[in-house]
Image (cartoon, rainbow, N blue to C red):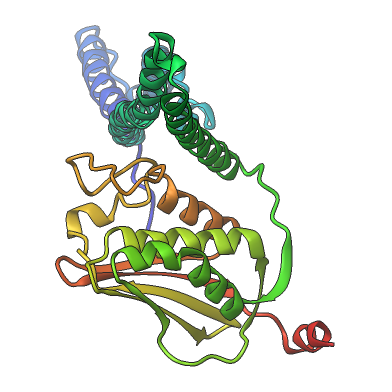
Length: 355
């Protein structure tokens, strides 16, 4: 398809044509008036004046538009638009209009993103404040009581110091989780990959949290009996993921419920680990934000189950640090399933490991 003639050229052509016709008619009238009308002179004048007029008008129009468009480019460049900075100034109005519209759309998206981040920042700061002030006020209350005279009673002193220590432990727990998630987000946490049996890791997690599950009479189980399944990952971090997911299922699980773990083979040398419960379930409107730091589905701020509010966010970052995927499916009132993929170890590696 032939390129459309630039609008500035069309303008110059029409203007040159009008000027040529007008001036040629004027010349004809003058020559006729002096009775020396020579048509070859008229033709020569016409052929000379048209290109001259066209070039003159085109130059003037281009320069006129360029000055004003250049100012637009300079003003836009102050906003650090890579689109405008990476290309030469154009005087084509259609191209310029498209670029301005594209620039405006990009800026609108950026502004909306910044607004969303600002809302997230405010919510995050409020959540951090809430998480930290509860143990801080607890420790402060016990210490002030001791300083006010309760220290003289040996039994009270020991009891209050023990409770204050628990508050300090919770603060350390939250700070450690914040430190870990910060390292994960900036990529400073080094993964120590090794080949290990994921079934054995899950069983060890069951052993670790069985007392917590017993308080709500929740059964921790595999969906079937498994032979060893070897994966290549950071064993300590993956164990932390499974602990967080199992503890979360217990925390929000129903009395006399079940937390079930399954391990399935996938294509491309992958396995998927699923943690399923029959607890409260999660409403669809909350699923998209589950992995945000300190985000809680329970807006009442119930903290009776403890935790830092960072568990799911840490799980997501650890899984993604392994270049793997994490998924969540839930039906409100029925239960939830969290799953993540891992790289399955090669057969040769497994043989060497067993040897």
